[in-house]
Length: 195
Image (cartoon, rainbow, N blue to C red; front, side, top):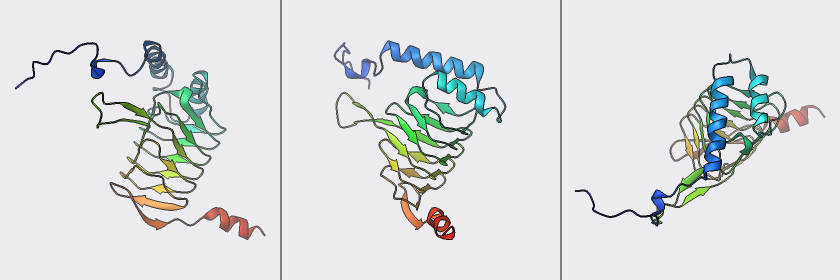
């Protein structure tokens, strides 16, 4: 049976989370990406990066950003050098996303930087920054939830879901993701071999 409850201007679920200005900015961005980038051949990374930078993204050198990825707000994206944002990846970044060098987001990964407080009557919107350090690999269809810090060299296995920080050089899998093994820190091995 449907409720006869009368909704009014005090109902938080009827109020927009984002301002009109913010919505207009994202609409302009989405149209721009659709018209100038979404159809482009995969190797045209430099062109797509130039468009992202026009919208405020701080992109490092030699990034690989694929045409059918989805970046919610480029002005809240920062990457270091040699970063891959693969085919079908969605970066939902209202709280900001920072990605370190040589990090890889594989096909259809979802970087989810916001949620709601389901214990409040107004279903409070919560946004948090996600930090993905150097040499991290987020595997295909994996999900990184708000506020997570993926520390250097960590790996999130295919279709895994992580809601807490990932320790350095550690491999996680499952839903909820759990540590399954350690990853060899090849940076130490390289440093030792060069002595």
